[in-house]
Amino acid sequence: MHVLTVLDHPNPKSFSHATAQHFMMGAKAAGHTTELADLNAENFNPLWSMADIDSDGSTNIPADVVREQDRIAR
Image (cartoon, rainbow, N blue to C red; front, side, top):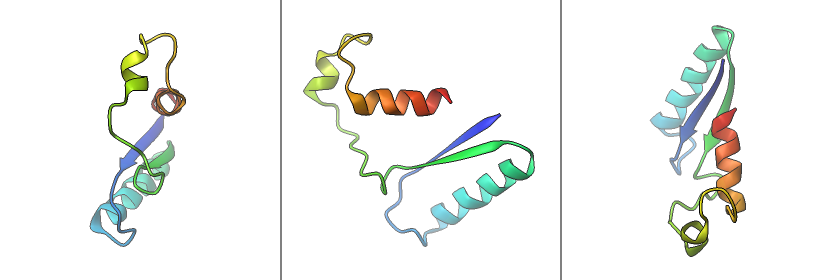
């Protein structure tokens, strides 16, 4: 199985970061592949935009939304 760990914390020395790393180490030890989505480091914008509103869900989908959908699908 592929495990996506989602994190959004500005301090790379935080407990949240340490927890995410230990969780992923456990998943790898169990034979899974892992991927970290560090939303803060990626400057992820959580705001709903007009581009999001204008999309009908199958066309005109903003590129950032497609990237996140692809990452979740993995």
